[in-house]
Length: 397
Image 1 (cartoon, rainbow, N blue to C red):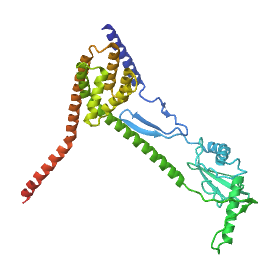
Image 2: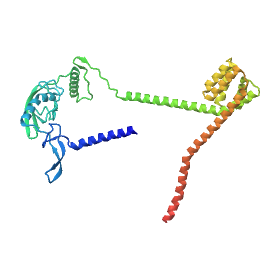
Image 3: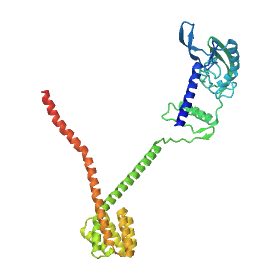
Image 4: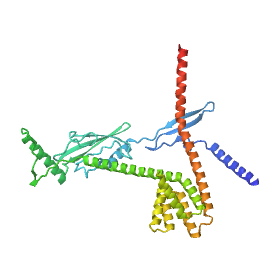
């Protein structure tokens, strides 16, 4: 309790101290003997809310103190200082102003300087207003670029020369241009002919021509890959669906099979005799079932000399479902220990399988009821419409 009181007292003292400081120094600390320090160029204006009184009247005044502007002497100095930096900025991708082969860069402003810049040239045929070259330079020529700077009412001007030179073309570009000229020449020579003859050589080298195959092979290849993937995925999904159907058929047949097997064991038959009896009755019945087909395969394995324990293990692996794996493990273990108590275990397994089967049937019924809900609602809606339309018609009449 005492600690809480101390903490509350400390917070109160700190808060009152901060409040007192705010009351003593309410302003931003920029007013000094009726003087306010202006911001330098680029720092922006200073928005203020001041309180003024003449002893009788008191008022609040909102005002903005503009940033300091440069004097004419400062502007002249900055203008001269900027010129070398501007010439470097104008270069863009060119090596120097004595060898201009690509577009120039005309910045409207230069960082660190207050001037708004405009450009003129005495060769507008070659250089545009933004510094881009309008046509290819075929021979060297010297141009004058004039830069005008503006700041408030101040204006500055200076000029510098640049030399435009033809761009040095690489070997491939020269070869393509020569080929284009040769093809154009052939075009003119065969204008009156029924056919156009392609050039057979260029610079003493033989030319071999062929049609571009376009993107059709690439498109066909892509379509083939997509269709193959879809077929593979479809086959895989179909295989999964078949496996799911097979497993469901086995689970449905499993309870009856285990119950029949437990009854035969209780009657005194051995494991093998019980399986063979179930297999013979299945063959005589003539109805196809995946579980009993696998049991027949297991019987044939034992007849061909495979040990019973291995045959039971193989049966569980082939059937895949957990129930048959548990059943075959039970047979293999009791084959080693003897059949004492096996009939009770099998009866319990049969009862459990039947209970699981009943639960599965109940779930299927719930799912089927849920699926039937939408058609029932749709039928209800149709019946309501059939009742309501005649009713509304009679009111209208």
